[in-house]
Length: 154
Image (tube, rainbow, N blue to C red; front, side):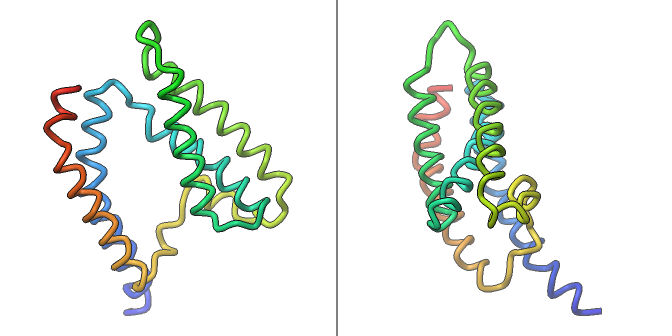
C-alpha cells in the first residue's frame, strides 16, 4: 500500500509547488497577449534536447541554451504590426519540427521521445524536491520583485 505513495507523493508535491509559480507567470503571459509563449518554449527546447544529446552534453544545457536563443530570436523579430501570438506560433511549429527531425538522427534519444514530448512527473524523486523548491522560491522572489513593472507594461 505504501509503495504507491512513495512513488506518487514526490510527484504530487512537485506539481503543487509548480502551481505557485506557473499561475502568476501564466497570468502575465495572457495579459501581455503571449498565450503561446509556454507552448513555443516547450517545443523550442525539444530542439535543445536533441542538440545536447547529439553533442553528449547535459540535456539541461541544451534546453537552457535553446531557451535563451529563442528569447533572443523573439526579441529580434518583434514587430508591432504582427501579433505576438502569430510569431510565437510560427516559432513553435518550426522548432518542434526541427527538434523531432533532429531527434530521429540521435539513436540514444529515440527511446525517450515520449518522455521528452509529454514529460514524466513520476521520475521526480525525494532528493529532487529540495533543488526544485529552491529554484521555484528564487523564481518567485524575482517575479515578486518585478511584478509591478510587468503589470504596468502589460
